[in-house]
Structure formats: structure tokens, C-alpha cells
Image (tube, rainbow over all chains, first blue to last red):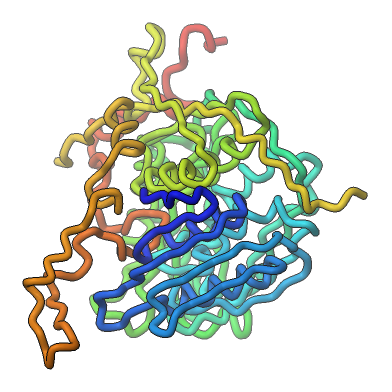
Length: 381
Length: 98
């Protein structure tokens, strides 16, 4: 990617990878200039969700300067210090809360004060990872890195809110950490149980059980230990729009998590309405895709895992992953721009005794030397 | 039947990530000013096909859009077989077998 001659300024073009650019600029303390954001579009410049994300970053930090030009097509972001504390933010309903939560989860451990964040918006959307999925995929990784964090690390869905009306509410708390340990995470283990939640908001509760039945029909062929909770929301707790969905997680013997998530068509969207049976089957099939891809973290958590590895102590971190997603590939490029971290990527060659096992697609190991990042704003208690 | 999944080769992947890539803003982008239609001498008309050749305005999403084909056909015996040993119910390595 384009690196300015001045190494303390990152410059990019376009709205692609917007959030990771802001996140990595904040962590590395570098200024970032993004130009030509939707420059040729009929609707040029940053959109509502990006503006909402920038406002959230402004609340999360102290002394951040954000300059947006008149047309909104270029953004200059001068990061301040991550402050944390007790915050509340109403997110744009264009995107799901996962769009905002994912970058916040990356930054939260490096705040000055522990973060207590309440977000309002759409908890489950088709485009973004749902809050349920983040809870099962990314939160366990945070927990691995944050010592003594049991009580303080929490992600709770207070109210569900479906697109387009939203009205959902989530609560996220995260303690602060001075440094991250280097980790070696190479054994994905074997899947011992599958859990999940099927929810219905402002629609018949039968929708949940229909999704559960069709998902179980697929998954029970692999494993007897499948249990999917049903969750029905009524009145205020159900948000402003009707909808339903299902979120699945496969847990291995070594504590690795593979997740999948599907959500119904939002009210008023084009195309045929979602059928619960189809959603259930599709969630199960997506989970099996994740299992096939394999590795120690699922495709949603890849970028978060690689970020923490590269920020770790000046020691070698190593992780086994399945195929990298296009997003992860972009993330690795941006990591090099901000922290000069270059990962060594190797194919995993199966040993003789592994050769006969059917464990899905080819795996990779990614190795890096930590940048020795340290949270200087953390108050010493 | 689903198409075979291309295996990511580590060396190619490294080149893809860290080497110069089409679509990255490394390469000078041809501006092609001559192709623009002049309107009143001051404004230029941007035609749809001239927009976003670089992919720089792609949607910022973590997971690829759903609706793409699954990696394997999970409804068949064959599809199920290729991940059977990812589960505790499958075969174990000799060294792990109690």
C-alpha cells in the first residue's frame, strides 16, 4: 500500500478498509490521510456509518483531531490517546453493531481506563457479524490475552434490534492491559460440542424452533452434542423491526471456536422473505465451511488474532490458521504499514500420522515477532 | 457438485500480501484526462465505467457476502467425509489415542 515518505503519516485512498485504517492509526499513533472516498460516486464522501464510527472514535479517545473536507471525500485523522471509561453511542442503523464493535474490541485493552460501552443500533444484520457471533468468536481471544479478566470482560445483548428499525442495545466491558504476551497457538483440537442461539423478535416464536430443527438435522450427522437455545423477544426487548436469525458455535477440545451466523431479510427489502428452515440449514453449512477451513481461530477472528500477535512482547508468536479471508489479507498489508510487522507464512505439511485423517482444507502457520507494544496510558493502581 | 477449493500456497500468499499488487495504490493510476468530456470547460463528466477501477471504494466488511457457494457440498456423504476427523467422533492420531 502507499506509504508516504514521512513514516509518521499513512495515506490511503477510498473507503475500503476504513475501520482498520483508523484502528491501526490510533494504536500506532500515526496520522492517517484518506483521500478520494467515493470520489466518483453520485453520493460522494464518507457515509453515515463511517461518520458514526468516527464520532465513536472521538468519544473513545482524548485529543483526537478529525478533519473532513467539504465534500467528505477526504478525511485526516490525528489520533489522540485511548481514554476508555463509561461511554454511550447511538450507531448508524445502516450497518450492524458488529461494524462498530469489532474495531472497539481491538482497541479496548489499550485504553487508559477500563471501558464500559453501551451501543444502540442494529444487533443483527446481514452484512456485519452479529453481536452473538463476536461474543463467541472474538471475545474468547480477548480473554486469552487479558489475564484476570473473567468478571470485567463481558459482552451482553440487552435488547435485540433488527434492521432497518434497530432499537437494539448491547453492553461491552473490557479491562485494560499493559502488555500482551507472545503466544504459540498451534493445536486446534477436535470439536467436542456445538452450541447456538436461534432468536425471533417481533415474529412468531415458532420461527426459532423451525431454524433449530433444520440446523440440527445437518449437524447431528457429525456430532451428538448439539444444543441450540431459542430466544424469543417481546415488547421493548425486541427492538423496532421484525426479524429472526441463528448463530452457531463449534467448540474444540483445546478451546478454539468456530462460528457462523445468518439473519433474515430485513423488513421491506427486495427479494423473497427468508424461510426459517433455509436459514437454519444455511447456518449449519456455513459452520461446516468454517470447520473445513479450520485453524485455531475462525475467519472472523483472524485479523484480531494477528493484531494481538503483532502487538505482543518482543518474542515470537505463532498461530495455525485456515485459509485467510480477503479482509485478513488486507489487514496484514495495513499491519505492515503501521507497525512494520511482516508475518512469515508457511503451509502446514501433515505428519505421517496426520496424513490419513480427514481434517478439511490446507492449513497455514503465521509467525511474527511482536512489536513490543505497551499501553503507556494505563494508570498504575 | 462444488468446485474444488484452491489451496492457498504460502509463497504465493506472501507475494500477494506484501508484494506489489494490482489494485494497491502503489502503481501510478492512469488518469486518462483526455477521455473526460468537457462540460462548459470547467466540469468533467465522470462516466460509470471510469469509476472505481481500483476497487478502493469496496464495501468495508469483515466477512465475505453470504450467498456464495459453500466450500463443499455438505449434503453428500463425500462432503461430510472430508471433515469427519475434525470432530471428537472421528479418527484420532495414533499418539493421541488412549
